[in-house]
Image (cartoon, rainbow, N blue to C red; front, side, top):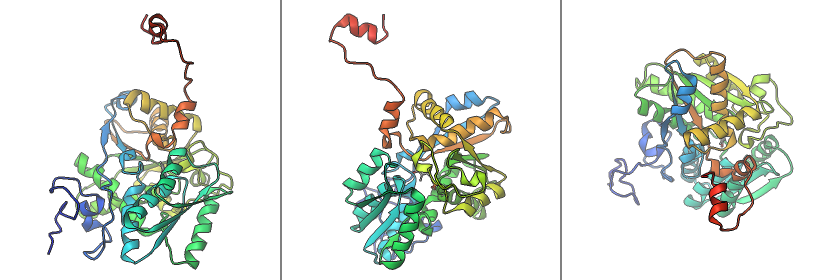
Length: 367
Ligand SMILES: *Cc1c(COP(=O)(O)O)cnc(C)c1O
């Protein structure tokens, strides 16, 4: 029998390569030796110390950035998708279905392609960033653009999944949540403990639910002793958890969290409450400030929704929320190249110049 040790599966090189989140955390995930593992070697994303943010906060703070944009399709969705698609193949499903603000469809279509499954994605018209749409299309998904928002698309796929032999891979699929726990595991493995504060953007609220579950399971198994306070941030115009009511027409430039009726509503509230944390809102202006700051001071390019965590960090720091010398991890959920239009829009590009050395020297700011 083939050994099931890390990295010895078919197609892997030697046994040194990172094996993907299922092989790495198999004991924590709902897979058996009979589960065919569909992986793009997701996970193992960098935990980057932010000198700029640590300095800005002062008082001996250590701020780390968990750069989930470094996953194979550019967002944390891959952690859940490897499990959801593996389980779909195990269940002999032939097609997967999701509603998406973009990253779920990018991830689902890539993993489905790898598994030889059909993928069908419903996306809200005009509300999906260009990079994400290009991914779903090139991976061969059937992309259905709906003239409605994400919440309406999610209601539609739930109905479709009931009437047809397809697997729903939105985060209401429990296998997604299971896979996404591994982000918390990696943070603890890297730090040798849990952080004091875990700061994350919140949209449909599956991720904060999963991360809290991850910390809780690691503590139960004796891998950590303390769990962090969970701090979730929604965009002001799309903050149902903060306002305590469904938002019919959510608005924010951060399309990945433009959600008015989160599927994991209870999970998010429980994470905040049980951990002694909070769910709060940040404005689009604060999100864009954090977006530019991350890129210009830390060299980390994220999509706008991801910057909600850092916007929230700065807001709470200003209010004197954090205890001294705390270790804080901000989750950066998706890559900046997902939404290049946003970056270009925020900076004016000068018109082309003739190739004259003096004109170029002046334009380069070199005197
Ligand atoms: C999906 C997504 C979110 C929101 O995560 P939820 O689990 O829906 O709360 C935030 N940022 C990015 C980049 C995403 O793709």
